[in-house]
Length: 153
Image (cartoon, rainbow, N blue to C red; front, top):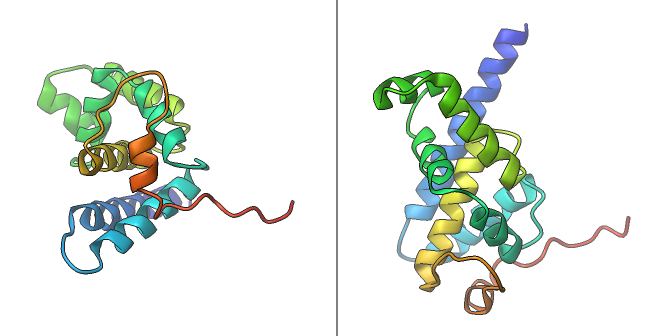
């Protein structure tokens, strides 16, 4: 039963990735609101309060962690990616583990999607990644991501 449940979770993660990536790449009428909804759902899932918090977490990632998280979205397994790169699976897993920890993600797919979301937001706003300070232009431009409403408890 555990194997079937794990496979179901993997299929759900892949479907989430395809949906979010499709929305982030969409253009035209309604694309902004679709991106906002997908982004908010992803932030809620990862328990990230707002865009500034997401960008602060992404700023902590090393270049290698970013690359591995991004590239993991396009493969079926870590072993497949490690084989393509001619690297040890354990080395790649360690980079992914560090990236998940820094982003506060439960899964590699979720961490990769958060990274892609942050990069998309930065690209669309013209704000680059860099440590320190807030991202006032980005926060203002992306007010379509309202803060998560409090439920009074």
